[in-house]
Length: 117
Length: 112
Image (tube, rainbow over all chains, first blue to last red; front, side, top):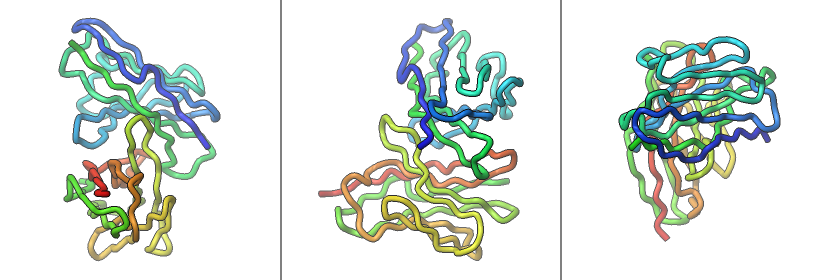
């Protein structure tokens, strides 16, 4: 089946630094990738949608200058949290969709736990 | 506005007992509905989906869900739970541009 990986699975960084999270589709080409944020005991909140080769589309309230998304290839999207602060600590999940899939058919990565100290 | 409500934050059932997780949605058009399961260290896995047709949907791992338009509900059921079913379950609705809106989730605990 379609597999999506994320790296790293967890990361700790100091306040003010930047951290990059990778999302890879391992056995299919992902024309679209989605980035979600999940707070403890909360739902997944969609942050942005990225299509290969074009700029990401951010949801309302998401700072595009803080959460930089790059979808440079059909198998890789990256989320960079710039100038991280403790309130950015969260669980970040990506999902990927290929062009042959049915509507809303997304494959989810295992998530990345970010802790900002 | 489109939304998904899962009224139960936690549910505890004994192994072998039946299970029903509740989900209500708010959506103007005919909804695309989903149930996902999230286990630690694993990505969300799709259990089942409803797009149209038969309102009783069969999924993986012995789960089923019933779409009831009159009640705006899409409850998940399993006749006999196993300890391995302990996880977080999310109900979701498809939105425009292929986006998915998730409920807040229900944590399922299994008693031995």
